[in-house]
Length: 242
Image (cartoon, rainbow, N blue to C red; front, side, top):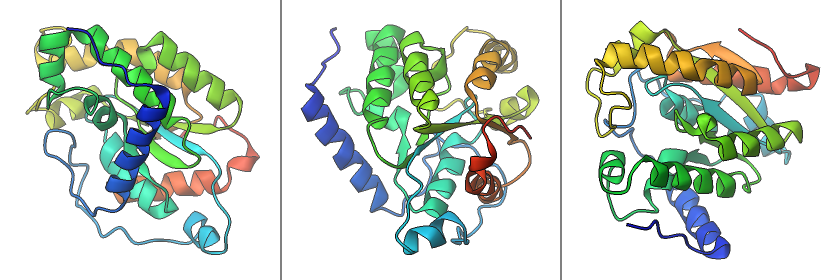
């Protein structure tokens, strides 16, 4: 089955409508898409960027969150977007909206991995046209050559700030006891698969990342607060590691 590819203007309209819908809803994480990083805290709005926005300034960039499945990209991304008062985009949700199937597993079963990766890349390309947003990338997005080029170009132009949510494989395995709708990439035992996939992907995450943060123990709001602090002082130069 051939992947339906809408025109650029049509797809941009679809993405903008998707972002507006997400921004206007106070929605809870979907159980098959998120993992628990700790107690779910009330997402208060601190000073820093959000206070600056009230004075009429903006962050003028995109924040991309990278990491393995289960590292908390979606939950941390939502918390960060609320702090920065910008839209949140879950790239997996945008990509799945291009298909009649309702789950990633079904897309892989019926259309194959290549169709999914093509949709991911198209979703990323259009998401990078947004002025300001927090974007949770798919775990495999940076491994797609075309997507990696897009991210590298925008990073070099200082249009996107990439954060790697680092997580120990054992912690990821514990969080992903229920794989949800995600297909296995290797057919191995989940713990073995996670360790193997992370070993392949982590060098790419680290090569692209402007900032790396341990996401093993702290809550999404605590991680978002730390990333916000880094963003507030980013003029001191990229490449900070934690």
